[in-house]
Image (cartoon, rainbow, N blue to C red; front, side, top):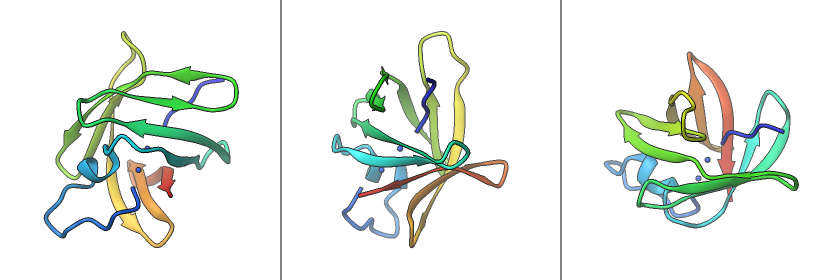
Length: 105
């Protein structure tokens, strides 16, 4: 099963990028919209992390990008860049105007 995902419970200051908020080394519930599935996402400040469900765990790398985050799920995979937005539901990650996943705590 392929997983992709991301985020934090501490409110961000207006100038703080959301990529820094989600990369606090603590687990986020990552709801993948298309699959209606839930994963656990942990991003560390050093650019590493884990995304796991009950069967599989991957170790993606990430980097901050203007207004969002870029993730490489596995070595050799293409990098995917997502826009991050804080909403009432949590932190949404979107690509081309469509929500890909939502992070919540």
